[in-house]
Image (tube, rainbow, N blue to C red; front, side, top):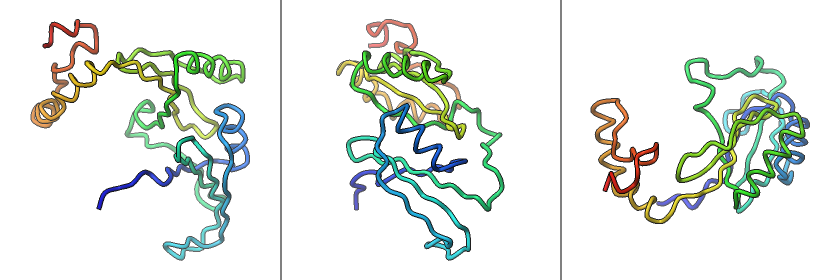
Length: 180
């Protein structure tokens, strides 16, 4: 068996209507489906929910659950806020910069663009506190090959030392040629 693609990614939301409207307005996603039940089909637990689905493009679906009878949403306090996020790709730097302008005009705090060498990103939070990233790929085939060539060595070194390997230090300032 091999996974065909991700069917959908689901997160919790505070308010399904507010969430759908925010993603439609700020990220131009289409609202495609709503499912509501009073019982969870997989567990049979009595737990009413609203499950909404948004089209994130190219067969990617972003979904949310509103759970009115559960304790209020919270985040994992043992994980820094920057770690858990959803990154979505845009086609160009012009689109990335236009998205930033639109978000800022909508009163949303935006960090970036941040240069990650192989892509540039902006970061912001949705109304539920989920961190989002919009990214535009900027890596060359040469850069991507260099990273591919060292991925297993980097993983093995990290596994043994828990310190950042230097195999791809060129991404953080050293010229590509110095790490040939």
